[in-house]
Length: 393
Ligand SMILES: Cc1ncc(COP(=O)(O)O)c(C=O)c1O
Image (cartoon, rainbow, N blue to C red):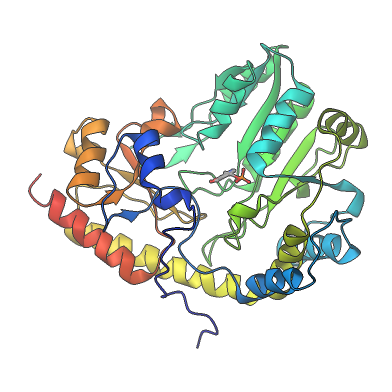
């Protein structure tokens, strides 16, 4: 019997939520948003945050003054204990570097550790702000495209990766594990191999591991931090995805190498922590573990439903259940529709907002990313609409 409910449909209108902003969706995708549209794009969840997190924010507000804040020991301890307990990671307080979000940390790292024109490796199809940040900071995007087989299983192209690292102009690699959008958790051997190559060629390894707590019950995640490479590794950890608090912009980087920490701090200066972020982090890591366990069961259930539904009713879509994340990567290639047309049919006929795979790189063309972290009844409704829309196509 669950202590939490994941079936409450919460109205996100009038909260400034990006996910349900008609204006943003029109700007971003040029798609229509109707009164009954179901938004399944941006990676936050439609579940209420853990009760302890909400309570901690209210309790903090009741203290009446929202002043400058020095993180208390309980803040660092909550992070250290969580990663020790759940991922056998031995963190030290000095290694934790606060950042207002992971994308912001990536941008700051690009600016701190690389120069204009330097090469930065990514592995498309991958979370699109990686490429955007590299381009915005005038670095050069190096695409180590994932290799996809006929069953849509993805592998890393190590040969190409090493060749790219060997170029002395290559200075940084942004790794995504678990990988958004394909949902794969990279085996420890793969991560170790990439770490060794980066170490050998002096390429900074930025491991974005912020989806690591949202994984299937039979899946195993191994952090880059548990493997050898202390010299040039930055690991991004966050409460963001796990506890559905993306709007708080709380990321803690783990950087063992003191020289790297100093170089980054030299660029960013000190970054203040909001007292709400501090309290929410403590409540999340110390008091909401059972909530995460229940959440993962709910995601397992949603994914099982989606899998069955597609097999039975939409067999032209190819789908592999992701081992990590709540994002699904649906192969619509069999419909032979151009992406723009496909997305507008989905928006205008099914009243769903989904994301086109090409956003994640050319390698994603023909795919659709669908976020299934919503109450089951919402997912059921969305899938029924998809079935109706694609039944005769
Ligand atoms: C892999 C990955 N990294 C970073 C982010 C964004 O993190 P933040 O909001 O902390 O910048 C996301 C959000 O979807 C993500 O999926």
